[in-house]
Length: 320
Image (cartoon, rainbow, N blue to C red; front, top):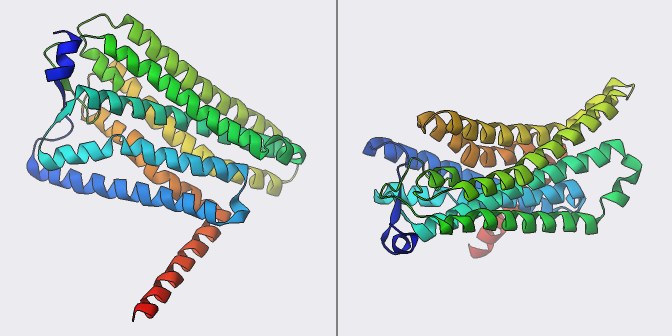
């Protein structure tokens, strides 16, 4: 079947999780709860940073962008999955699948680049503390975030548009709960050599290079911290990196686990569970990691919630 015909009449089937209706009801409740926690938690991070002038620093500027990217990243896959479970439908159109792939790749790459920017910020803060405000000025931070957005969109466009040249077989079943690019390529009847080259190129440029940047930044940070004579100074320096290191470990650990397991073994419940970790659990845990491990964030979040409670009580008193 030619691609032109398939885009008109063909749809992909997202096989997703269990067929059992009781299990699907349980999964819907679980995933909906996780999605709401992710949205509310990351929105609270953004509101807390924007409402407290003490948090208007490069580190928190990157963190607020990371929270926004996490909201968007999760929203590319979870709402469609919840609708499919609710309607007992597994169908997604060709155009819908391409759209989902585009945003999934774009926001996944953006997460990579933002985590790299945050590692660079910690590198400058610890290794060059006297020059920190000069180097990490607002103009540079804005350009870094803008550049990250542009590069992510271009990389995603490059990978997504090459799908349009493919023809697909009659088997349109994706053994996943979203349009995973690697799984979509496996369904193609035509030659996918160019697509694989593009996918590897985007992965190296927007996945491997950022990870190398993070590793280099932390190698310099550890080298610098170990030269500090006092144990208290070392602990203080390491504590500023703890939250970011936890998020990086979660993000790259689950992401690498998903794609290494899918490359070695056929899709299974294990790979589906790993994908849930990558697409849902990690964005959900980020706000908890940054708020619980960061004294400034905990204090500002407490003030924000206190103001919200006072405003609510004042509104109720006026209405009554």
